[in-house]
Amino acid sequence: MSVSDRFRGCLLGLALGDALGAPFEGGVFAGVVWRAIGLRSPGVLRYTDDGEMALASAESLVACGGFDVDHMARTWAERCSWDRGYGPGARKVLALIRDGVPWREANTRVFPQGSFGNGAAMRAAPLGLFFRGDAAALDAATIEASRVTHAHPLGLQGGLLLARATALALRDEADLLAALDTADLDAEYRRRLGDARRLGRALPAEVVAALGHGVAAHESAVTAVYAAVRHFGAPFEDLMTFVVSLGGDVDTIAAMAGAVWGARNGAARLPAEPLARLEDRARFEAAAAALAAQR
Ligand code: AR6
Ligand code: MG
Image 1: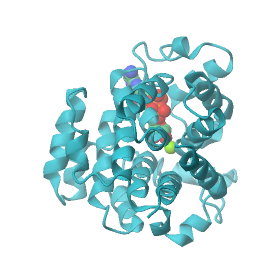
Image 2: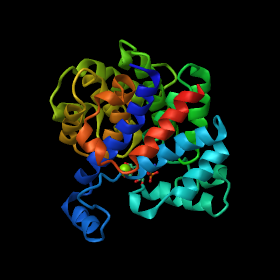
Image 3: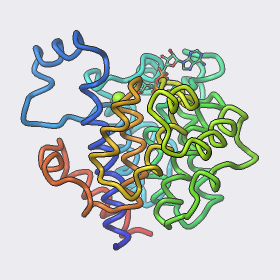
Image 4: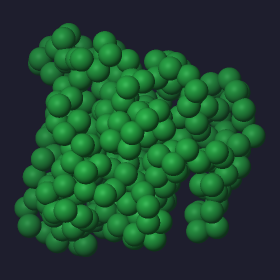
């Protein structure tokens, strides 16, 4: 399996997970509203804020030939579209940045300590790809990128966890959950990483009770990595079925899990049928190919 196939697998896995998970979120009413206003047409698998921000992250890395936090922040703010289901805090912070407020000020305007939502984690995989060979640079860039909208330590560390998990999956780390359990992480993460290693093939309800499935980063980032690792040797569809069975923030958990699974298994193992219907598939592939060519 080539490096570029794994890069494509990661970004396509993220977008596909997001798009396949989205209809399971928000309940029946939200689904009816989206269809009524034409944003969920039957033929297209539409991605949400997870896919939009991850694509913007990857394209910013490509455009700058490296990590430029101000360019990335501007790119996120300019592209943020109201109809992609952004978290309410993130949407406001991005609107402030678009209106010219420096991100270092905007990031504590909604929540004084910053957001601990999973928004930094859901978009972190491209940083894991780009900095896969340099752990210190990966950490520094991911912390800075996460801080733009998710300055709370738990929000930041969610980004760190997903960027690190992506880099570890790329190099076939044998015990990924153990490798992620490092002393610099908050106890909220370390406890869940310990639990995740002991869960084995537990039932969905037990997984949710131990790891969570919420919009907070510490209640979904470990859950997603656990789901990916559990399905490394299984088809992508089985991973999606499992994530849907967990409930909660399905699209974001599926996006994060899809990215890690894809970095390990490559694009060739993604299911052809849903992939053919993925919105902007060619753009995700082009961004992955350009990232793979750079480093
Ligand atoms: N204090 C209290 N509540 C908080 C805090 C805090 N410091 N931080 C976050 N929350 P947000 P996201 C709660 O808005 O992380 C979308 O569906 C608060 O209720 O920053 O970018 C995405 O796809 C806040 O609104 O958004 C993700 O699935 C919420 O956490 C998900 O939403 C989310 O934080 C999170 O996106
Ligand atoms: Mg989403």
